[in-house]
Structure formats: C-alpha cells, structure tokens
Length: 342
Image (cartoon, rainbow, N blue to C red; front, side, top):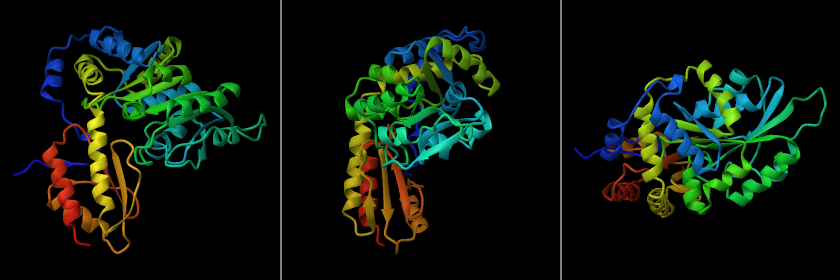
C-alpha cells in the first residue's frame, strides 16, 4: 500500500531519523527549576535569531500567544487584530477567557492589515471604551493562504503602535516561511515587535513546541503565566532538542515546500472545476470549488487516492505542503487533481 499523502496541515510531520537521534542524545534536567540545559539552549538560540533577549519554551503556539496577550493586556483593555487571525478564530476564545480583554477586528486583505486600519481602531481615552493596548499580527496568515508581511510593512505598523504606546505582538506560527519567501532578516523583527511567538512543529518538523521571545524581564513574568496555564514541564530537553535541530537544519528547505505548493496551485488553475485559487505565496494552497462540485465528494475522491486535504469553508479546500512529502507524492497529487471529473 502506498504511504498516505497528508496535506491537511504541516503539523502532521514526523521527526526525521537525524532529529530523533538528536532527541535521544539530549542532555536533560528539570525545566521548572530552570535546570534543563537543552531547553535553556533552545530558548537562548531562538531568541538570538530574532535579536531578542530571552525565550520561553511552551507546548503550543496557542499557549505562547495567550501568554503574550495576558502580559500585554489588563481587563477592560482591547486587542486589535485581523478578523481571520488565529488568536481570534482558533484559540477557543482565549483572549476573553484568559485575559478578560475585548477584541477590535480589522477586515484586512488575506489576513494582512495596514497601518491606517490599525490607527483607525485605536480607541480614544474615553471611559465608554476599552483601552487599546495590543496589536497582534500573524505571519504568515493561515486563512490568507500563506500570505506574508514584509519587514517594511511591519515597520510601518510598529510606528503607529509606538506613537500610541501600544504593544505589538507577532503570531509567527509560520514566520520562517515568511522570512524565506521575503528574504528578510529575522533580527529585524526584534526591532519592531515587543513579543514574538514562533512555532517549531509546523514546517520546521519538530513534534511539538513553540517559543515566546521578548525582553528578559517580560519573559521572566511569562514563566508564571505559563505555570498557571499548566505549561510547567520537567525533562523537556528531549523535545527541545528536536526544536534546536529544526531551527538549525530545516529553515532554508522551506523553499522546497513553497515551490511544491505553487506546482499544486498551477495545476488547480488549469482545471474546470475550480473557480479560484488564492495566490500561493508560501506553503498553503486554498482554492474554491465550482458550485456544482460536491465538496465532500471531492475530499472522498482524494482520500480514495490516498490524499488527505481539509475543508476550509463553503466550497473551499486547503492543502499544505511540508517536509514529509516526496516528489513522487507531489506527482500523485497533481495527477489526482487533473483526473477528477466534476
């Protein structure tokens, strides 16, 4: 039987033999006591990549985002973000539950907002309104089909935040995809964001984990929030070793994922049953099926060919490329797309 071709997400990757070896060889201690040397190395290395002072290793990107929001807000304050942001759509209402903050939503373009839109969302100093205290950007934008901000776009939004004394957070779940696609320098991000969340378990291929990066003082406070959320872990160095391996070996190869996603996007555009393919900027392909095509039937057809994809809204399908795909798998995907009869 041919191996399953899983395009549902880049979170489905398994550790490579080399990554597993790094995990087996990891030196570990008790991280709650700050004594796991591999966790400490990962946190310092991740922070150095972005020119930040410190890092905090957490189980998930949702946790790093929610910790950051908690650090930057108080009850009766407000977070500004795009309407399709992960922190708003996919984190279980955590902004309200964890931070008792409200949300000001922006209708961006493919998940991206402009400085002018951010400025328009800043509340006046009036007791009827929550205090605007945080702007959060997502890079790349998941529901935007992997669209990304450039450093110059980020700098312009940062200027608005700085001028209005508002913190700026980055949900960088796929930030390395953005950096590879744009050619921007990761250290530049440290100039513009107060905190940065980076995910190790998506395109980079680690089995679990995210880092929250920021000033040392704030990261020390964040450890307390991580603890109350149940994120204090012990011999986490085995997982941290996978994250270190991912950061040191799997960043530049993301270009392969981008190229393969564009191949898939090009084939989809040639079919008669797809009405729209979002621009393929990185490793996410989102397309819309024609009204006469049964979406569940299309997903079943793919599954019968050994291919898994995700429904992503009415008549919308998402496919995500990643390091566990081979050239033969990409050929099979394109063949299945071409041979589908609507």
